[in-house]
Amino acid sequence: MNIEIKKSKKPVNYFDAISYLEERAKNIIKNNEKELIWILEHPSIYTGGTTYNEKDILDKSIKIIKTNRGGKITWHGPGQLICYLVIDLNKRKKDIRKFIKIIEKSIIDALKEFNISSHSDRNNVGIWININGESKKIGAIGIKVKKWIAYHGFSLNINNDLSNYSKIIPCGIKDKKISNLIELKNEDFSKMYKIIIKNLCFNLKI
Image 1 (cartoon, one colour):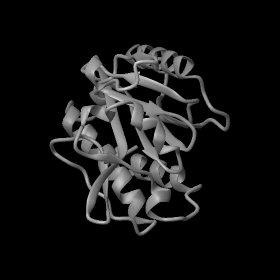
Image 2 (cartoon, helix red, strand yellow):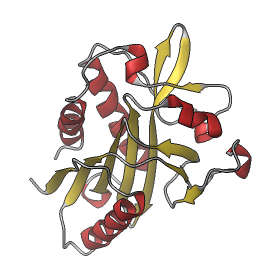
Image 3 (cartoon, rainbow, N blue to C red):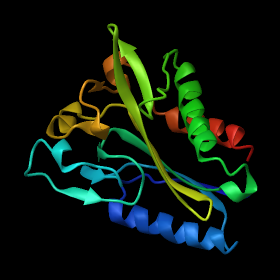
């Protein structure tokens, strides 16, 4: 298999993770390293993508870390599954939209295995579930592409503290709320990452 599957047991510093992704992307461009799927968790941090707006910061005391991924402001931290990818789209169709659809399908299919119905949204990239008739976001996707090497990835809220989102307008979406899997279903989701990896490998034809 021409890909490395990596899972970090301890929380990984955000800056260290991004530096690692950047270096891996450079080496893949040079054909020096394998592609990557990396599962991890971050200590609590707020990050802003390339299109974020200062107006989306509701609590001005928090620090926003600017990143080169797509998207707006989001929060990462304990209880949230992070999946970073470094994938060579030169080996596949050079289609960023299709790549994002592969990510969405991999998450949606993983949730089905827990009998959880979820969906993507053409207007708001990410994964959504319905709770008491209300659509809430549980998965955020942010991708950067350089010379057709796609990196960064997605986050999936499992049992994180949702109050962290009250300090920002997550992903710039004012009229919808954020949720997590535990709010919907009190279950053991410890095997979620294995199912997501399996789905990603299958959908990416790795």
